[in-house]
Image 1 (cartoon, rainbow, N blue to C red):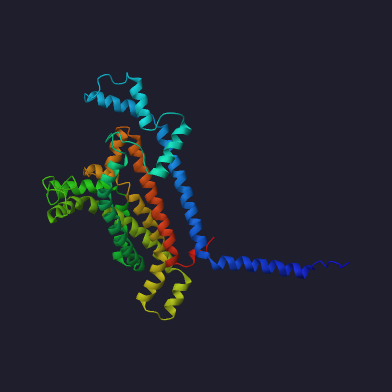
Image 2: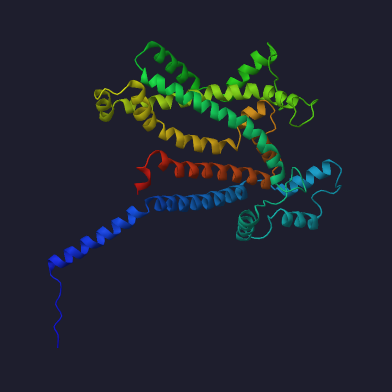
Length: 365
């Protein structure tokens, strides 16, 4: 009968080392796939949690959208005995998905949202789906706020880089102080200032609307010129405030990078100042700003409500105010859901693109 020899302490230690080496090799083989998997799983979990929170929030808000809708129908002469027909109220509750228990409503809400991308009918544009007025208003918001956000980011980040680089000069101090002052001013206040001085006292730009009502919508030069003129004041207002915030944060990041030892070593090696600025300062200082840009671009979808209201711009922000005033839950949920999806999706895209800029990110746990 053969005797079994148990491994000694040295053999057990060797086995542990082999296991650790194999685990490390597995991590090194697919670090990018592991990073993408973690980010995508977090994205799906956050998306589900945000949609659930939106559903709960609108179900807890006071007011009955069906009675408000029937009352409005009665006011317009479409229905003479508003609120007295229980069968009509029950029909509309089922039509708008607010009948049954809270769990049944939640199941129907998630089923419509995930499988059919449907939020039910809209009170504002009944019987059209809630997405119809949202998709009509969305391009105007994307054109207005998307261009303003990109312009503010580009100007603010570039200016902040050079202000941080020349932080000891008088001009840099003056620019920083002006940016600090303007960054605390609301965008709608700056917009109001421009409306008074550039639309009424000096009529250089239109004061409201998205385009001249006399011009037919289309890809004609007259229509594009009218849209550009009407968008000028809101875009300038948003850019002035937005670039100040980007300038301040970029300046702080650049100043922080300038104090690092590796930058002193690069300068001691005799590298050209532009090379130090490009390869060392900008590459490290701009990474947080790129991630922040993704979140900001996602937030563009929801619109700048007060600015759109001030200029009577037919964007999503204006539509959100109208839907809340009319207690149009489905349209409000559609706007908030698109806003959430935009923010999280842009954030995911930025997270997936960051390893291309900084390879250290994909190895982080």
